[in-house]
Length: 137
Image (cartoon, rainbow, N blue to C red; front, side, top):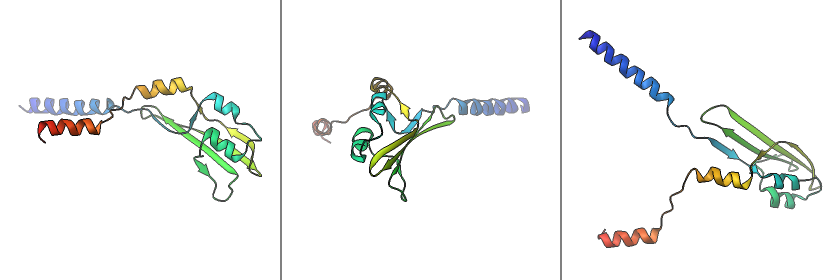
């Protein structure tokens, strides 16, 4: 009987241990992702307004120097190491003076493929209300 209970405890422990490694961990991408055409248009001489229209609001603006903008992004695949990229823009007299670092580059087609892997369920509130009314609820 003692062997049977020890065997059961060992089986339970191994099941729990193996189960911990098969938990689904999705890829997590945060921050700014650009297509190559957009980055190619980002050249010194653009005004701040033109940069905002082209690449959007920066992730980080220095509170001490409004002429330093940062676009930060990170990608963590399946709970692994976090890979970070930063694109740093410097302005002089409200005109883009320099661009340093790197950014995530992905084509719009690849972005759509990636999003399509995670289907969204959109709720039609009118349809749901009509169904509830028909059921009498």
